[in-house]
Length: 352
Ligand SMILES: NC(=O)c1ccc[n+]([C@@H]2O[C@H](COP(=O)([O-])OP(=O)(O)OC[C@H]3O[C@@H](n4cnc5c(N)ncnc54)[C@H](O)[C@@H]3O)[C@@H](O)[C@H]2O)c1
Ligand SMILES: [Zn+2]
Image (cartoon, rainbow, N blue to C red; front, side):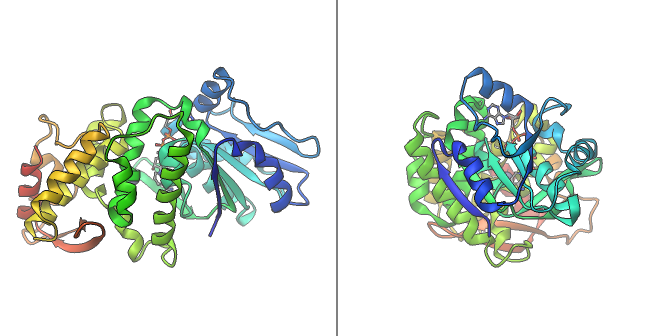
């Protein structure tokens, strides 16, 4: 598994790690999200200086957009073309949110049949989720993340200072994924979030949250890199969440916001199966509200539209069943494969 280093100011260790992990490197490629780069420069955050001994190709100005707009074949080709001269023992470094580490990591997987790379995530989602576990990829006109590879970075260098320039809304949305892994395997992590999200300049608090969340994700990924078993628990909240995201789009609803609502639907369904009690449903709702995350399906989104979005609609055969992750007990979850339309419909109706 990847080496992970988490702290405040650890970005300045980048080139030390490069020298240690890539001792023969004369060149390096550094792919950076342009919006993150501009915000960080404006805040005068300071980036690790390019070392004299290494010829660094920065891929930032050439990129045609930021965030999700980077996950295209065009950007993949652009990164590949810019870094095609690198040898296999020279590093590709990805710095930005999950979109950047996804596309740059995929470029690393394809160049020279797989180059080792370093992820420097700069968003909450990037730090606790996207950069951990080796999934990389881009979108296809037919859907999100349809092209990609499993290709773990050699090192994930997480500097919580980067959160200072992230939009407050993206910070909040990202805490849904932190809460999610807390629900799956770390009750103390959930308790830490019960009073809300710490301010981004509280480095100690964020280091602790990120460390704990990364530990849970790594435990679930370990032994299941290819996502065939326990790793699927990480989809808690994602069945309904993905449907809402697709229906409403990223401007209206961030991924984490959709996941928060999805988790509330899932726990409601779990309560109807007696996997959790009613207090657990109310408790999770309170926790998500403390994080300023939404917990109800928006009024203008019909239950039928969500059912169609998850593929459980009337166009399918009447006995179609769906797979969902349902929480159990006080912490933990289980994957069930027999969720019926009727059952999900009543959980959706109860989450309004
Ligand atoms: N590979 C995985 O296992 C995995 C897991 C979860 C999510 N993802 C992917 O991650 C992506 C979402 O990641 P995200 O939420 O980090 O979004 P993102 O990468 O799209 O970044 C969100 C926005 O924040 C900006 N930004 C990033 N860092 C910044 C900073 N420090 N300061 C100012 N602005 C900054 C970006 O320009 C962008 O506009 C999705 O494409 C999703 O599919 C992948
Ligand atoms: Zn997610």
